[in-house]
Amino acid sequence: MISMSFRYLVSSFSLLLCFGFIASDEFNCPPLPPLARPAQSVHELRPQDIKVVMTLGDSVTAAFAAMGRQDGIKDLYEFRGISWFIGGDPNAQTIFSFLRHYTPNIIGGSLGSHFVELCYGPICPPDQYRPKQDVFNAAQSGAMVPNLKKHEFTYLYEQLTLNPSVNMRDDWKLLSILIGFNDLCIGCSGDVPYITADDFETNLRSVIEEVRSKIPKVFVNLVEIFNMSMIYEKSKTMPHCEDIHRLLPIECLCVFLEGKIGDDTRRDIDNYAAKYNERLRKLAKEYSEKNYQDFAVVVQPGIRDGTAKNTPIDFMSDVDCFHPSLVAHQAFAKVIWNNLLTPAAQKTSNFDFKAPFVCPTNATLIYTN
Ligand SMILES: *[C@@H]1O[C@H](CO)[C@@H](O)[C@H](O)[C@H]1NC(C)=O
Ligand SMILES: *[C@@H]1O[C@H](CO)[C@@H](O)[C@H](O)[C@H]1NC(C)=O
Image (cartoon, rainbow, N blue to C red; front, side):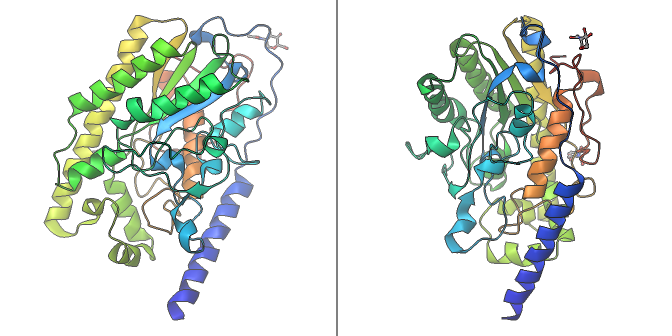
């Protein structure tokens, strides 16, 4: 009883924080004049050019547990409609919705919520997608980098080809990839070795090449990952987290170990994250040197240097004190939106969710360098 009402207090408090954040921080960039002509190359894309949005990724992009404590089984839901990049619910604070301000008939946004679509280590059960809700959000909870090409891309490509609103040849498409957290967690659990940086890179290159060879006109948004030690530090500042990890030691337990072994494990896992990020930058550089005119791979550092201090107070879902909350999804959306509309040399990497939205003028590009 006491713990019930405490939980109620905590969740009402979280709700207040969420609404506070939404109210003070809505996307209200002014509309743009129509384009004089559509982009002739990927290096001159503007927000109004994007017709199709799609993603590959893991539970972060599937928005697992993002709406916090629910009733019973719904604690295990994905809230794809508010997923930071591609959520398509009305009024969602997502990159898909920001783009919809400029292109009302943009497609790909995922909708609503449903039971988790879960991969188990390297195995993703076939046919767990719900295309009416997932649309072009091919992320699967638990996915690792080897799952992207065989499992997620297969779904995405099929949906693209089946959808009569997609003009495969002419539409400009924005694809986001945020992956690596599960590769890190499986490694730090000690059951199997870490995926090496070489394997991480090889897997990612193979899915990117698959995209390039099968889908014309794509801008690939590669998102650098943050240190998982941040989640541990953050959980220390969130009073209801300690109990949850004691009760529910299921996800990435190695990040939450105490004492010297905990510190050593977190140092290892953070070092791997840094290596994976280095490979993302290497891949982006490689593609930049190829200088394709209808395909680009751009790395976004916006959330990379997130720490317990420079991320929103209510960063983790109160379901598991691990997955990003609604507030975190909105912060990801803003930070990566700002990265997209900022040239490489000026992009921020310190999770600057308090910065104002970058509002595009008719001279702003979705920058490739
Ligand atoms: C992330 O961890 C690495 C390795 O320990 C460290 O060098 C880096 O400073 C950390 N980044 C942040 C933002 O704390
Ligand atoms: C931006 O819009 C203004 C006014 O409509 C126009 O004069 C100018 O040429 C436009 N610039 C570009 C790059 O389209």
